[in-house]
Length: 117
Image 1 (spheres, rainbow, N blue to C red):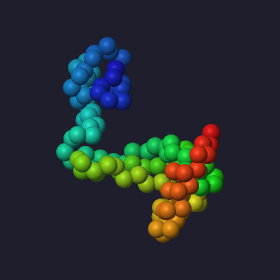
Image 2 (image 1 turned 120 degrees about the horizontal axis):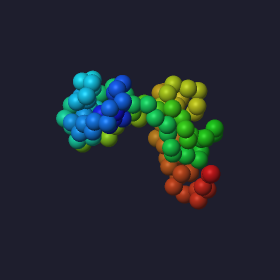
Image 3 (image 1 turned 90 degrees about the vertical axis):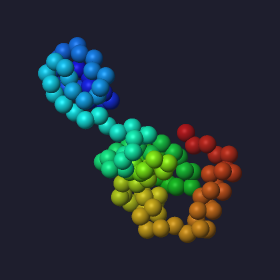
Image 4 (image 1 turned 45 degrees about the vertical axis):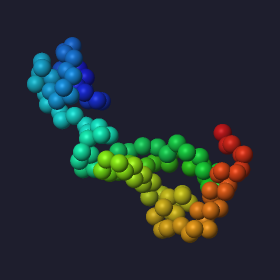
């Protein structure tokens, strides 16, 4: 039985709870996840994901690097943190990056015409 966003309770009823808080059949309770517009969303746990952007200047590829998204207050985009690996992008995120390196990456990405598949 689905309860709200991405949660399934342990019973096999056909209840269609729309309140995202409890199943009317078995009573199992689960607070609904915070939405993007909810105040206090920055208190949520991090969310794991995969980077889906290919930044050509990096080798190996940047697609599918593990990430953690940290929600922040309304009006601020989430902070995306790469998992601590030895990939050059992850290393630069952890240790810092110079303005010249940012310029180099931006020029390569914006003006390359090279689309890697």
